[in-house]
Image (cartoon, rainbow, N blue to C red):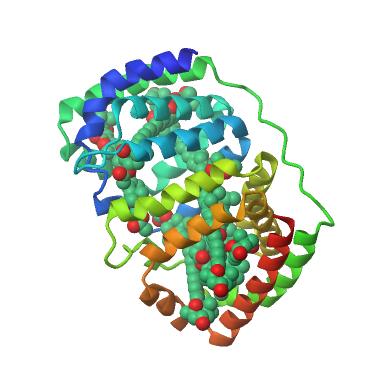
Amino acid sequence: DQIGDAAKKLGDASYDFAKEVDWNNGVFLQAPGSFQPLKALKAIDKMIEMGAAADPELLKKAADAHHKAIGSISGPNGVTSRADWDAVNAALGRVVASVPKQKVMDVYDAVKDITDPKVPAYMKSLVNGADAEKAYQGFLEFKDVVAANQVTTASAAAAVPTGDKIGTAAKALSDASYPFIKDIDWLSDIYLKPLPGKTAPETLTAIDKMIVMGSKMDDNLLKAAAEAHHKAIGSIDAKGVTSPADYEAVNAALGRIVASVPKQTVMDVYNSMAKIVDPSVTNNMFSKVNPLDALSAAKGFYTFKDVVEAVQ
Ligand code: CLA
Ligand code: PID
Ligand code: PID
Ligand code: PID
Ligand code: PID
Ligand code: PID
Ligand code: PID
């Protein structure tokens, strides 16, 4: 297809730049400017809306392309192979082309809103500037091909199951855990702190397992889960906490997507996360909330998971 061909040219123009970026640099965990959690949530919300509007098959292929690319990483900077670099660019170009232009521009504008204007120049200063310029010229040509292949209308909303066992169980889970949700400081910057003692390649292993799980999920249910998050963001209070009803809808939606993949795929995520999250992190989270509320939430979760497993 045209986007695939254009991705090869983009690769010619950008792979030198890709090799020069230090993908293992911890700086990429930081906010790209002053820390503004509510504005950042707005930007994430725009990405969620774009993800929910994207063609699910193309989204899966993009997830698969990332998984494959993680497998061909080499060298100290963590760069993937040239072929996989091109494949990721092509896959993302197709995802972009599957949503109306305005959805893409909404992400761009919202990210711009939380990005200090000095950040791009700083990023450029870390690589060969001429190679960054060459990559950008390549991107500008690529985006014209994407625009020429872009849809103009958004896809239909997902179908949300009703009256299913997971939906019923989600109500009990949400009742048991909403006090805990209200105890959590959602606007803290602690969630952007590095995981103690872990390197970027180690962390990427766990993310890779999530990508694999995402790629196996039921299309409609993943879309519904994204839409449930978008709705929940719309009802947050000043402390970032969503309404009880929207929280319940998120739990139901996530239970359903978990049930749509094999148990082992879920456990692969859990086990890889357990390897990179030191118990001190979990204990620290626990120390900041009412312990009775956390225990009630945990009890609710362990009951919920049995319902999920029964329909998995
Ligand atoms: Mg989420 C999970 C935040 C968007 C899909 N997500 C999580 C949690 C964290 C979070 C609260 C990971 C950390 C953790 O486990 O804490 N997500 C979060 C934010 C946003 C977002 C702030 C922004 C909009 N997510 C989002 C989108 C999707 C997902 C758009 C795609 C549709 N997210 C997704 C999945 C999962 C998460 C599939 C998880 O599995 C993970 C999670 O919650 O695992 C348990 C602990 C969790 C909480 C504080 C909230 C849930 C409370 C539960 C139901 C009960 C508490 C149990 C116990 C006390 C703690 C867990 C014990 C542990 C051993 C499992
Ligand atoms: C400017 C001025 C003009 C010239 C110009 C110009 C530049 C415009 C530009 C630009 C626009 C632009 C857009 C970019 C957009 C990037 C979008 C990223 C989206 C990320 C997403 C992430 C996600 C997920 C995911 C799916 C999940 C949801 C999420 C489900 C269902 C200014 C040059 C034309 C770069 C969507 C993918 C996992 C949130 O106009 O004169 O330069 O760049 O998890 O959804 O699972
Ligand atoms: C524009 C203007 C509108 C019209 C429009 C428009 C186009 C927007 C577009 C577009 C956005 C867009 C984005 C693309 C992004 C590509 C990103 C590629 C990333 C590849 C990576 C590969 C890798 C790895 C990996 C992880 C490793 C690092 C690596 C670590 C820690 C402008 C059409 C709407 C194409 C990251 C995965 C292995 C490097 O908006 O008018 O057309 O395309 O090895 O991580 O090691
Ligand atoms: C300039 C002037 C214009 C021309 C121009 C120009 C240059 C702009 C530039 C540039 C922008 C730019 C951006 C770059 C962005 C790279 C982003 C990389 C992200 C990597 C991540 C890696 C990671 C992980 C991971 C998970 C870990 C955290 C991390 C935990 C909990 C100035 C040329 C356009 C290079 C996210 C995945 C392992 C961080 O605009 O005229 O030159 O470069 O380790 O999670 O640990
Ligand atoms: C233990 C001991 C026993 C008792 C027990 C026990 C506990 C087990 C547990 C537990 C397992 C467990 C699992 C959890 C799993 C969480 C998984 C999260 C996945 C997140 C994903 C994120 C993503 C996306 C997304 C889609 C995108 C890709 C991504 C596409 C196509 C130890 C109690 C049984 C919590 C997948 C969703 C946006 C990466 O066994 O004695 O306690 O918890 O962007 O894909 O867009
Ligand atoms: C288990 C054991 C195996 C069998 C198994 C199994 C089950 C795994 C499961 C499961 C995992 C799982 C995960 C669930 C997670 C739910 C998370 C809910 C999060 C809700 C949020 C709501 C909100 C917002 C929002 C953003 C705001 C904050 C809030 C900010 C900055 C165990 C079956 C495989 C259900 C985050 C979105 C508006 C609070 O593995 O043997 O069954 O379920 O307002 O952000 O303000
Ligand atoms: C313990 C002992 C057992 C019993 C038990 C127990 C407790 C475990 C606990 C607990 C685990 C736990 C986890 C919590 C996790 C909260 C995660 C919140 C994530 C929030 C995010 C928000 C954000 C953003 C966002 C984007 C911004 C950055 C942020 C930028 C660029 C010990 C009870 C089981 C509470 C990610 C989305 C706006 C940060 O196990 O016997 O008690 O709590 O602003 O992006 O700015």
